[in-house]
Length: 347
Ligand code: SAM
Image (cartoon, protein in one colour):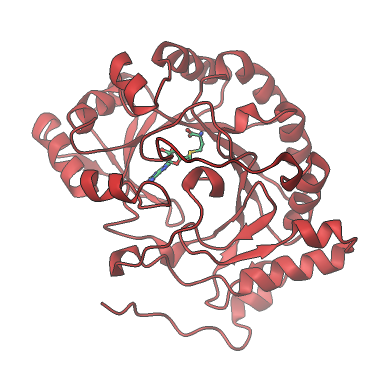
């Protein structure tokens, strides 16, 4: 199947003239959301994220230092980025995480700093992160069964994660969003119990389709459950879900169990890609601006900084890279890219 691309912009359009500062790609999409991988290391080994054996981690000297990281973030803020999401790997294992949050939140123009985490360390860290200005967290939790949790994370402790979720809620890192990757034969039968968490709690439970990233292509092929299948399973238990308005730049389409306090989200990168409204790029922990989650197109900023480049040169590199952002990931067309896994890119 051939993907239909919109025509690239060759001249400035009205919006562009109205907001000249924003970094746009050649299709006119403004990039305002930076997802930052603080480390490629993690304290879990989730089966859909990392292979069982053969993971290689970046040498420390290849990773951005705190100073380099903050410099890139400051320049992105000047280019009109307003939202930051800290991810990884596991962002909470990055040294100085609380200070990094405080400094990032202080850049003029940065309106929101959020984090995607497995919550293992949030029991201890949540109050400090909230005080430093972290706005909210998305927490990955794929099962409510401690034994299955141990299997799916290859060793993780559900009780500590649950404590972390409660600590985040108590610290006001809300609205709490829980991410579940639904896998055939593993946790598909639990989606109802996970969705039921929203009945009494103002949380959003989001069901994700597994993507075939490096190292987990076989897990994807054997285990993909589409959002449509998950929704059918939920409706068999709860009756028809109510459709809610969704923010077009939010990859989740939102629904509600009738009468529930919280909501349910479906994130469907495989069956219903949301590339047309993509407003995000990623900064890898080794200092590459990754233009699309799945495509290998990247722009170096680390070596440029280390060569002594001034801010103008780095801003130009960032802007030029964003201009070359690919239209879409092409999963629905059967495209598949290897190279980096999710934990290396920053999911
Ligand atoms: N360690 C943190 C965590 O567990 O949330 C942040 C990094 S993790 C890579 C970020 C998100 O990517 C998680 O919600 C995880 O479920 C999701 N993820 C990882 N591998 C995936 C895959 N192959 N397909 C879809 N989502 C994936």
